[in-house]
Length: 113
Length: 115
Image 1 (cartoon, rainbow over the protein chains, first blue to last red):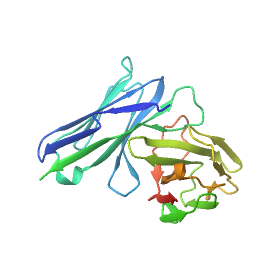
Image 2 (image 1 turned 180 degrees about the vertical axis):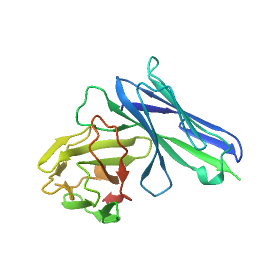
Image 3 (image 1 turned 45 degrees about the horizontal axis):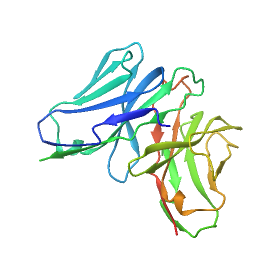
């Protein structure tokens, strides 16, 4: 079964608004990563947050991690039409020494101009 | 650097046919993985490798074989294609950082249809 579950499955907002996506996972993790996928393309890494971190920023991206609730959120501020894409969280299990990355089902974000 | 290169980009197979999806990376990454992406299912791990000569099964390995004879190449073989294997396949690689501490680089995908 998949490790990560994203919520919501789909999100539609206006340009300039903020977008928040959530990810829940099941087992203890070493870190959690977020990826973006434009339509018909491969995934691109956005940001990684380690299990001992609570918040991380990268440009307009803000990621939080709550290991007690086994959840993470990705906030995109001041969204742009170019942010339209699917967003996935990926986790690496703490018990795994192979570094397998397990992905969630993704959130599809549409930003209307 | 080309990154991760997958071939072919598109393929149509008849049920029962076999084929190999190619994946090559030029970043000297130790870890390579194959995922399939189906609508509403996200990415599911098929097989992965932590180095040349070492492979292991992921979440959905049935019907697929892999080998890793070199660091650069990680082909995925469909032994006898079935309609349930219609999907988009992604190859990914990343450097060894231990327990997933490094980012994965993805190929552009292979869209496979089995009729």
